[in-house]
Length: 231
Image (cartoon, rainbow, N blue to C red):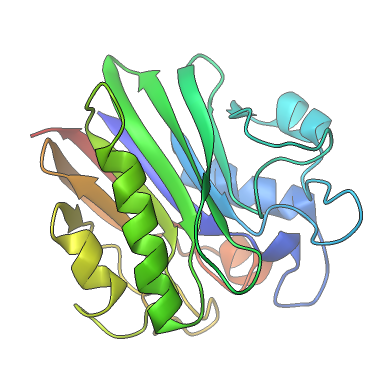
């Protein structure tokens, strides 16, 4: 069994408008997932350095960043990153180019942990419904075209407010959604913008949204999580 999670960390800027990467790490330790998809993990300007310094991740967490970044101090690609347990085996890390009007991207890697190998994708989709569907198509094409075929977990901030429509319908053709509940806004969550989706080879054992005092302050999104096993 593997626990996965997705978290739009909002560049570690909390609802109190303070940037505190150590608070973000505290929330991640509370969730304690084996594989984590992060969104908004890098600064948008300059060197686009990771908001959580890599030495802090190494010294104060059980995770390592999947090597996807193209800049030395960055953690991810267009703010998307994957964290995995330090004893996990990672292969085929890749940046996924997706069509967009503003800088957007997705990341993927094959991760082996706890006797399971998964193809994991992290994403942060557009605010526009039309572009979200184009991006979903590009991501699904990438996943479907990979060899060898593997069970897949797709996670991220989909920015989709309408249930069972748009990109959710596209993803739902070959993936099931974990029932994680609303994650936005962190203080009063009503929107299910963040999603975890698994292919038919996998079963969601348990899932939810992480509510804690730290999580309600650390970002405007709450983390979502799911435990999965072979179907």
